[in-house]
Image (cartoon, rainbow, N blue to C red; front, side, top):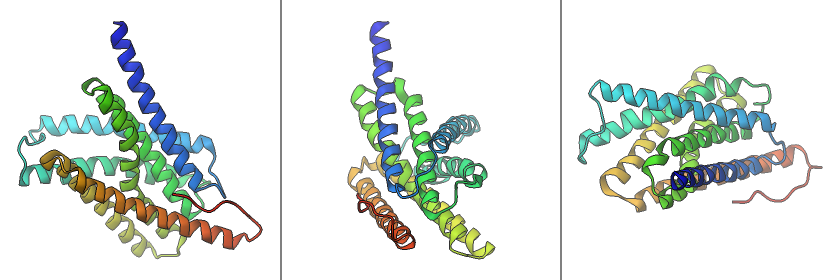
Length: 242
């Protein structure tokens, strides 16, 4: 029993450490006008709740006879995109759009990205905790570091779309189409990412997807930081880092 307790405590520690690290990373992106810590924590908790809801839906889908196919091919690809991508990005976006985006402090473009990341990190952390019994300690450590940023990068797409739609003066239809299109793109990319891992064990492909999204995230946050400094020329601070 002591070994079991140590195993779970270590896994929880890994998951918590990864969550704190990536939350700090995204929080520092918004250091000119940081968000209230209570809202970052609330976003994290909502993301964790979304992960629990996803597990319930996964179970229902499997009971209906649409479980994960065992062999690579068209069926597995469809499952990854239409089940995994749809459910996971859909639930993250749902709590973000219905609750987080309505907060009064959600008032600038950077907030759209930071809150989307906080939701995604909460989702990934709960997912890691739910998978804990089936993972070795090395897998726990790897997931605690990689899963939160991976989920955040997919969430960045629709978070970016929400920021553009709300703060760039887009019309209602244009804004809706932008957000819907980027949400659909995040679902497809998420599904393809998982398919590449499940079918091919293709770490190279998944690494390229993550790298491209990360570079887009860095470029976007740098641009927003520069815009914020231009709007407040007396505000000095260190340049936006990677």
